[in-house]
Length: 105
Image (cartoon, rainbow, N blue to C red; front, side, top):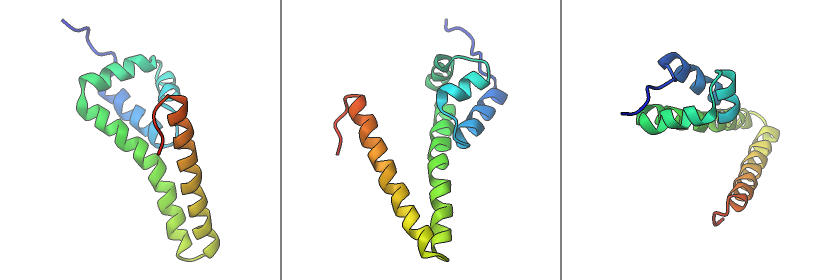
């Protein structure tokens, strides 16, 4: 019989909010007073929670890009900045993949 979850529904909501504003998974967990492994376990046991976390991570990256894109419609400088942000993100993803031993491309 699995142990009961230590992550309440309120903690799940707050965790996703923290992820959405830019906290890492580890830091968000520490702010809630739990270990990151506790959150991972909760995500493994609850696919809906895992999907909410992934969506929060996606929104964290897409909302600023959308804001830059909107500003780029009014200013060419903001449009150029959006291109730099996308290029920088791709470089960071490649570096992360190499560090983890995953193929890049």
